[in-house]
Image (spheres, rainbow, N blue to C red):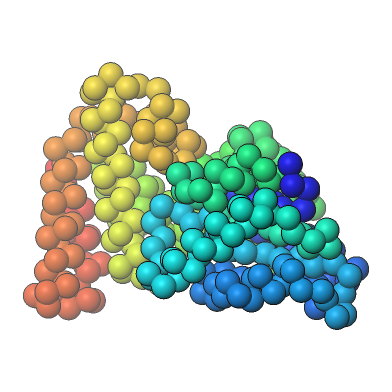
Length: 331
């Protein structure tokens, strides 16, 4: 095991970035700004990376070298010259058994590395790997409770917030920060569902699911949700994209249920969706199945509406009115 080489990986970027920030701050405080070297795919200068690892520091006794983006993920493609340079770099280090100076701490950062690559396989066997995975339910609830510890918030309200926001920690932290700021300004001691609905309403993706949930059971409520989304100044392209995604999710969930897959956690795994969102949506599966044809019709009409706007048949300003008409057409 190579004690001064690390691989930071995992899809929970909030925790990963927090750990990087902690290490940077420690090096900055102990050894000064000249001790930190940072590289990414945008400035992947192999020669400079070698220099930072092997050259003696003039003003520092320790060095922290961060290389963000390596090992490459499966979707990243480099130009031929850069790819050849990177290949030579990897081969040279493996041949030298990665014997880097003791005063250098080398950290590779890749959230979803391609595990077929030689670099990843070598690091997997020889480096210290720290995985930053998404939190489980209890840990997420504890995270929210800690972020909002200055206020009273009960367990059902925390669960309601997570159902509305999702499990991405950056998003959870951002919404907790908004709630904390609002409650402080308004001198509120308790955070309840009404405050969450008011402050967190601007989350377009979540609101797309709320809209669809009401669409076939309470059209007046669906219209109100749509108007609130419009009032908050949601970007049309972002909203229609989220509405597409939410509608397809409902269609896929119905298809899985009809195929005998009836466990919400299993469905979440199939669709790679937030488990809270799936559990909440699957509780209404009976209503969705009854309205399957309506959902499919709404989806196809939404595609037609967006295409008509994109081709200039209707102006951009017609979009919100067009969606209202689609809602009114549902029987």
